[in-house]
Image 1: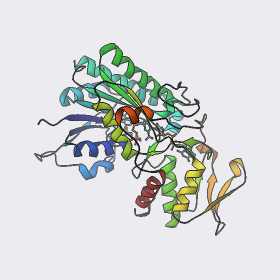
Image 2 (image 1 turned 90 degrees about the vertical axis):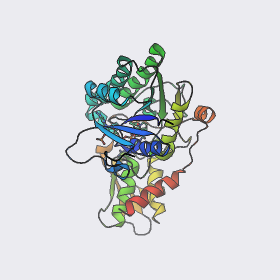
Image 3 (image 1 turned 30 degrees about the horizontal axis):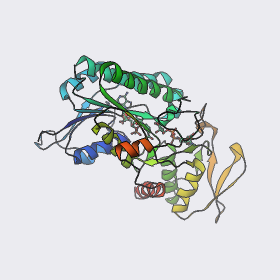
Image 4 (image 1 turned 180 degrees about the vertical axis):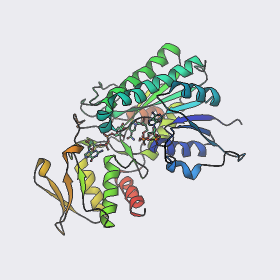
Length: 343
Ligand code: NAP
Ligand code: F7E
């Protein structure tokens, strides 16, 4: 049987790398769009990278950028994928306040460029398109959030992703493209980027235990997030494209924890009980046994606007996709700590 062909933008990122491995296991040929960088940016996929001359090779990388229409058009023309997963993005919320224009170009217009390429190349009936939408689009809408919850993005990232979300739905209706979205809530794991709060905490703990770092500086401890595991979430992306009809789905765990709880649970896994004292910027977290301060607050990690509470209602995905999260919150943190402690 002819192998299915997929194209993943953002293949070098957390989700792209996990999805690539998932699809290769399912028998797909995987093509990935990667940006040129001055040093290697393929660490997360080195373990599946094969010599392109190998006859059994099923992973191919192409240079391109979501801000460069020509590269997108040429890659899609060459690869003729059955499925496109658009995972590339400037994905850091805080960074989007510093680079709002670039974030809009890559995250919002980048999505439009792919959809236009599908249309121009007359692939509207041949390709299925997945857009990586995000719970950040809800912004200030209170939890629980589902597919019908009003969206009030609270960052340039959230606003750019909301454009991408709507232009995907728009191309679905206007041009009959199989274009779906997954509204994914936060998802982490051992290959999470080092500046997201989960990985910053697990790497910080590992460094403290190894004597390489004294304490961790954080921002707002009282935001709540619905944290799932990326390994579960890439399966949902694939399932969304296997349906007969395109649609939009919330992918979440239905449970939320504060950043403060994340800190406490992660430290407890390595046997340290964190207690808190002080208020606001002067609050500190310390080891109950030794009194050593292990958490301090730095105002530079606060955002101009915060999203206070995200907790997803994934009932539609459960019913329609037969999907539900398998990996529990503590197991995910433990896996992250295991990786960071053994690094
Ligand atoms: P990530 O680890 O930050 O990966 C982002 C990927 O996009 C990387 O491969 C990056 O390349 C690439 N990229 C960035 N700008 C690009 C550009 N202009 N052109 C081409 N590629 C570009 O993000 P992730 O956590 O895997 O998330 C995957 C997608 O899901 C993103 O769209 C994100 O916004 C969205 N999302 C994530 C979450 C989450 O909690 N993880 C939740 C909801 C939605 P480099 O490796 O070269 O930097
Ligand atoms: O922040 C607070 C911060 O950067 C989580 C992206 O994948 O998920 C992610 O966006 C919370 C926020 O993720 C620090 O203020 C406190 O309330 O890990 P984060 P995020 O902003 O929720 C969504 C769904 C996406 O789509 C995004 O692509 O933690 N926080 N102190 C901190 N955050 C960071 N990064 N660093 C701190 O020191």
